[in-house]
Image 1 (cartoon, one colour):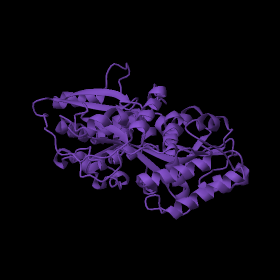
Image 2 (cartoon, rainbow, N blue to C red; image 1 turned 30 degrees about the horizontal axis):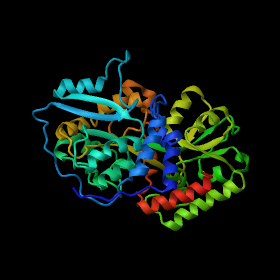
Image 3 (cartoon, one colour; image 1 turned 30 degrees about the vertical axis):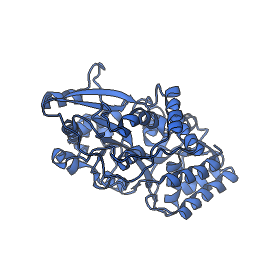
Image 4 (spheres, one colour; image 1 turned 180 degrees about the horizontal axis):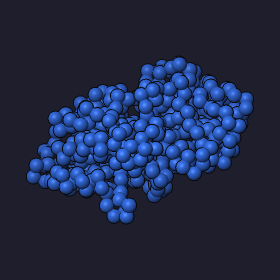
Amino acid sequence: MESYEPERLSPVQLAAMRRSLTNGRGALTRRSLLRASGMGALALGGIATLGACGIPPAGRAEGAAAADDHSAEEKEVTFSNWTEYMDVSDDEKSRPTLEAFTKRTGIRVKYTEDINDNVEFFGKIKPQLAAGQNTGRDLICVTDWLAARIIRLGWAQKLDPSNLPHAFANVSAQFRTPDWDPGRAYSYPWTGIPTVIAYNAKATGGRKVDSVTQLLDDPKLKGRVSFLSEMRDTVGMTLLDQGKEPGKFTDTDFDGAIGRLQKAVDKKQIRRFTGNDYTADLSKGDIAACVGWAGDIIQLQADNPDIKFAIPAAGYITSSDNLLVPAQARHKTNAEKLIDYYYEPPVAAQLAAYINYVCPVDGVRDELAKIDESMASNTLILPDREMAAKSRSFRSLSTEEEAAYEEKFAKLIGA
């Protein structure tokens, strides 16, 4: 394996990670707002470790060499995932889809909820990956920016399409060709995480809010608007509103988006930049409208019928959590079979009904309707064709770009 000199994160990048972990996307909640539970000092400790020892630069690599695969003689697979990201039975004593997989295939799944945030988890597995050693995991689930980094470093194994017939056929078009893994050679999405516009209809007097332009310019919303403290979400949504593609933007485009937001800050249109703590203010009506995450909105709507969401005509940003087989994993074929299993529509529907995030599997609607008709019609779980067509991803950044962009964004939000 090619070796890399460590690269130190800038203070601004470390600060951005701390924001994400404490109340931003790193703390973005799963089904019952528990994704970041237990994160606290451990997560920040992970940041300190990464800052001290450095994260290897994201140089292009061709992927990990195929490890010895013991799948045939060892009918097992070890799967690391986030909390509240797998279906459980009503009595909370079993995981129905995993048990059904084992019953069908004879492959025992050692399922571990040991991912509390991306940075801390990467700090945990990086020493083994860098040394060319087995991490003890056959399958991991990480957010797109980290998946991209692991693939670029050559620390993910290339997947065998012959073991993934359902995944290859059923992955939704909006998730099929990310710029960091075209054609999904190394990864498959577990869920999608849309960034949308949310508003409290009572606080807006019944008016719909459905564009970033409204958030930035509508005098009736002055001082009652919030944007996210995650650079990719806030800048990405602003780029779209300005007619720019988040997947192809230039430095000039980025600066233009920052300038547009700065004007709104200067005239006190924007009340503040937040992590997922915007939810309480939105529910109470202290914030009338905002840029927010779909998973939060679904949770808020369950308790407050005044909470609405809108998909801007200009489009919206979607990130994803993704399945990878790490370098030196012992059971690659078994891991691929597990990935493929979750791309069978009946199984995908059962999972989506529990976790309530965007399902990346085509052909799920009818199966989900058998479980819950309201979920099958919820476009925050199953985007319709029109909504999916408006989905955009923020492009991959070089290390230099990320440092420069986070510095400009930190100045904007006063971080």
